[in-house]
Length: 464
Ligand SMILES: *Cc1c(COP(=O)(O)O)cnc(C)c1O
Image (cartoon, rainbow, N blue to C red; front, side):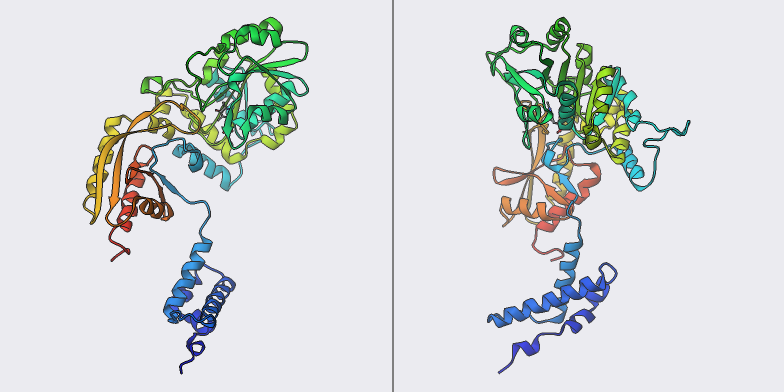
């Protein structure tokens, strides 16, 4: 009788195999030995429980090497976003312009004059890098930036209204997702929410009746991710400003999406312009840096200098301040807006959102033609709709083109899962028996990789 334990290779023999010798270039000797030992022990346990595992040294060493590589791979991986959703929050919202990504890279790998005035040798504010561009964009006299718009809301409410009341319409008590709810944010900041009006109707008189000695501010919140339609009435910002002036109460405008170039001519109406709030007389305007602005995750606060100074003195500012890499990327993004036409054609988020349908169809046809040369692959181009995402323009169905891909003998959900787990990962949409690939948010540089990802999934094993 053969003894399978005797056929089990020793750890030393597995370690001598060329696959693991080569692995020494990528992994520490300790990690390789531990992985080889664990591999051999797992086989010993399998034999002990009556199984007959393959005991070939090459195969064992290959598996150990593959496992070491998989464990060493970073958890954050590149994704080809073929969903058509440009501001996909789960995929990191706005991709940065090359100049912004490069600025973050340079800031990250070295030193910079973050808080040092090189001309005078004196200490400066890190906010100086973005202040003037934000002021130019919004028309505000002062500005500051924090980690995101949620942080901006908290710090603004704290600095202006802690221990006092802030009046908000019941139609604007939003939840953005991830437990960002206006009533909760209000509580965290130490301000008291004073709700007025109803879900669908709030009038100027409702706000006015709520104003009293304890009122610190009136806040308007843009209903970013939903719209109230039908029998509705909300008070225009200009009217709130007039009310605020009459009673000497500041008006805060949380606009959310950060639209700095008008996208309405491109079929994307309904988001407030970042300059509209200040033009209407709001004391402070808040918006995200990584939604329609197309920059890094950040929250921008623009408005009256006295309020901005108060916000910057708040102890929480230290906790909410931007790091050097984000600040560098934000500065580079804002610079692109000095020429709005250039921003429109170069900021990736804006360029993707405004790509003409005919161009998308053409790009889809080109890739579909290549995909159809693969065995077992069907690729049909058709029109579809997509959404902007990231809690912007919730009711604007954006006309788009997609490639409906199927691979023989692979179900659409299996195909989507395999594409998702590949390198680079590809995320599309599963619908109507096919995987839909929308090229709107796919960079030109990724098209060959996208093709290769599908090539790998047809005809079985790679190279078979
Ligand atoms: C998106 C949004 C926020 C939160 O912004 P983040 O930058 O994601 O923190 C706050 N308010 C409004 C109105 C928004 O649309």
